Picture 1: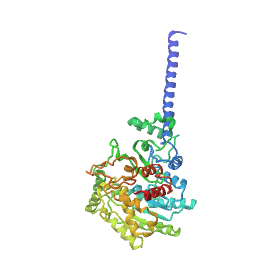
Picture 2: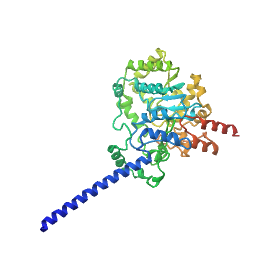
Picture 3: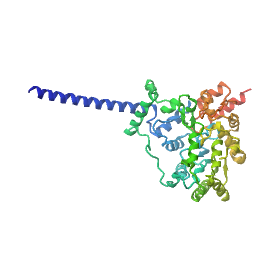
Length: 442
């Protein structure tokens, strides 16, 4: 063997060794990432995540949010619905605009199905699930979004074939999802903060965003918006700038329209008839917009279809409580999370007003809790602030002076119980205990 032959074989061995090392390195990164984010809860299959927060929510505050996608929110809600201990007697349907309705607002078992039924044609899946499990509630609150009635809205055109894009399920075997997690983690090193807790994971809250920002879905399906109380969290909606831009350009939910699509009117009527056959009381309402946004829309004269839609439903004897105009409840911009989404104080005000118009609802509401919550005018995330002792900041930069004037749980005993048993998967044990403590209070 001459020098050149020996050199050639050595180079081949070195090259092969390097390739093997590279493969082992990449594989180790893949397996570490997969194991880590499975332990944090981000890569847990949705059904397992739902069961986890229901089980752990019986002993402490537990909620879920994953780093991968929000497209699985509907699957999470159906998993919660099918696994909770107590059959819900009252339910709310709608988009993300109804997520700030919580179990403590109700005396009876409740579940929030917001984002599971983002569009009326999705109600069919909800009804099929209720039929399968014989799980019909007594009352359904349904938050109708104004853009559903606009035939120009792009998602309305795809109503029958509406599909979620990109990530459809949480899958620890999916290399795309692992790569996505790695890419995001290298941009934000905080995502690896829980490596030190490796042997204690999984634990509540479940999922890195839930752990970092105290933001996520609770066992009752509602959502905590804790991130806005953290100064380091970057919130893109400043002074409603993004929402106003959509109105000016007629984009997304704010596409212009002068006429309604009667197919939607007929669909709402059919939904009401279906629930009436099952002896379910359906209460329809349109959630409000922030005052600044409502004023901007009204001034544009580009949304004539909204008034037409409400009139068309009323003519067909379908009662819709229209809160789109925030002035009806005396709302202010500071009580909103962004231009479209109201906070928990507004939720309380809506429920209190609905109770006047629909007396049957009163038996399902915790009027004492709602009254205390509604007294904190000018705030959007009172429940979060009270649970975590984190003052709500002016995340919209509107010049809001946020202050809790009426504590929800004024005594240490009440707060301790609220933190431990605030959400128990649509049961009311915690509410009963809190009521007993109230009676003992001086």
